[in-house]
Structure formats: C-alpha cells, structure tokens
Image (cartoon, rainbow over all chains, first blue to last red):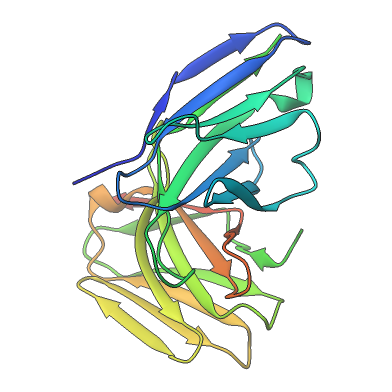
Length: 115
Length: 112
C-alpha cells in the first residue's frame, strides 16, 4: 500500500538555526499538508498546499515557516530561525483528488528537538 | 481551539468486549468526521469516517455514530482486540477548508 514517507525521523537543531523537514507524499496525490503535535497537546494544522501554492495556513505558520514542492515528488517544510517552542512532532499528510472529505494519509513524522 | 473535544484521555477494556470512544464538537459547519488511530512512533492512520448527513457508518468491527443535534459522535469497536490498543483521534473537517481539526485523543488499552 502506498504511504507517505518523512525524513529524518529525528532532527536535533540549535536554536536560531534553519531546519528543513522532508516529505514524499503518495505519488498520485495532489493536496499536501503539514501538521505538528507538541508533546502532550493536540495535533495542529499548519498549512495546506495545492497546485504549487499555499491554500490555507494557520496562525502558527508565520514568516519563519515556508513550504515548497521543489520537484514532482518532495514536499518540504522549512523553519528559518528555529525557536525552543518549535520542538514538536511534525507530520506530513497528503490526499488525492476529489472532495475535501477524502481521508488524509499521514507519514510517521519527524521529531524536531530544538536545543 | 476547543472545536473538537475528546473528554476521556484513556479507556481500558477487556478483550472481546465493546470499546466506545466519544467525541464532541462545537462548530455546526463541520460536515465530515474522521477517526484516526495512532501507534507510538507512527503517524495517524485513517480508520473510518462519516458524513454529517448520515448517523451511522460501519466497517467491520468499527462503527461510528453521529448525533448532530447533540454535536456528538462515537466510535464503537466490537469485539475489541489487544491490537486495537492505541491512541484514537477524532477529527472534523468542513467542505470550505481542507484542514483537519483534531481532538486531544483517547488512549485505548485492550487487556487480554
């Protein structure tokens, strides 16, 4: 069964450094998402991406965050200058064409630890 | 953001019995609801969903019930199996936005 893959599984970064989280969505999917889960809290929506542009973003997704689909397979989340509060699990998700109610399929996440 | 709430952080049931996980929501614009299951060190896995125009959807051992007037949904697992032990997330979505809004999750433990 096709799956969403994320790399790395764990990223440790010094505060103030840039970090790029990588995702390979399911190949025929067109809608892409990033979510995060701070330890002990809910899974929170960050951003959705379709047709090479951001469809929607949350208040969390400020100017320090950006997303990109640099080629036909990868979908990346960049944090330019990391803060301690960016420490969280980051999940990438994708879904196929059609109604927005189609289930999103998630990767196993990247654990980001900011020191 | 308390639009989707799962008030029980944990639930423990005996193998073979029914597990009932509950979820409440506040936003009447939600028109689709999903349940995800999550094992440690893995991402959420889609389990079952229901449209707001229905009150029940069944898939094998899993049934989701929706009570729109009460803004409440529940997931029934019967019979429960030890492999069902995981965190279960309720999520909601509205047609005009693709984002999922999650509840806090309920940790289910099924004892052999």
